[in-house]
Length: 495
Image 1: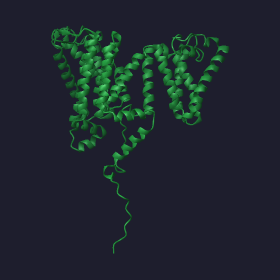
Image 2: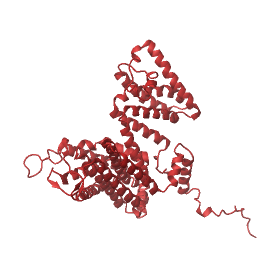
Image 3: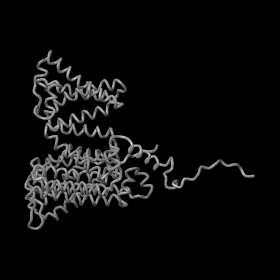
């Protein structure tokens, strides 16, 4: 007599192809589907996923070609060149950080090293004038070798420890280049001038092929764009190769990758070498465009900017880091204009309302409360503190100038009070992140107005600092909505 069995559900013909519950792949796909259905970036993510990656890159290159054709002003062309160089640097950093998962804080030193090596072999500094193809080849080989040497500590160092070592390397490079005009060399009478010190190395040779030299800015724009296309195509093919897949496995779990007989140490060295070579190539183009190299061009803030580009676009995504580079590069240039800076600031301020206030049906009430709060405060201050509303706003004839005049307090001497308000704004923002419910909504009203007050009375007078503060605010805003970046893939850890 056979034992009774439980009734079996009808077999689904699609079952063999469907992911199983409890498998990591199923969890990751569920997280992906959830993000595709929700959030302000959901339509963009769906279009991104449905469009082949080469088509996206072709569209970006086509836009760059159109820009190069119609841009005639040398200033606009230089903005385009700087943006392309940012994209190249972001692509190189993406190899080390986004694919191999190695926290390299010395990456910007490869960029500077490439620029200086090009100056050594193509200038009057040592009387060497190699042809451009040979000079660029020397730069790429030298920076790749330097990447190999710096990558050797990565065999035993990971995470924060590797970051400290590589950051130390970047600082050593900066110190050596700044003080490289008085280096004691054995057998040489007196200190030798290697790097030119703070004055750098001017008079670097222009790029050329045969008897033709690149003298116009537009020519360098096409050179930079051509280099970007070649590097992006090579990295795209590399990403789909065995090495690219091995890098991603190394990023997810180095121990598991080693257990699967992957050459972990060799993969780390390759990542450092490819990233360094890309940065070195970019440095040689930069040196030729600038007609010189100087230590101030390779300081820490540039490294932070490149990291912000990779994080914003999505580490591990070629198209994502390019979009991040274009977004931040163009934004930094736009913010040189105070009027555009004001527009971007108030757009971010309104966007912050949607991040702070939940549910969103309360947003109109919060915006109205902020407007009323500002108008009433302005009227009261005008009666009891006339000097608090006596200053004409900077850029009063520009966009939003008239509205600001009737809404934000503008003291005649905003220096000290602007600094105090900035400190209060930071403390208020930290306090708001710890609050929930109606205290959070109520606290958002004075905090948003305080943000406008700080902008009009402090930040607008310091454009060089404000540019990076606004880019940081943009980065924080996007990371709150999409932590993996605009085009990055969500990573799900199974515990």
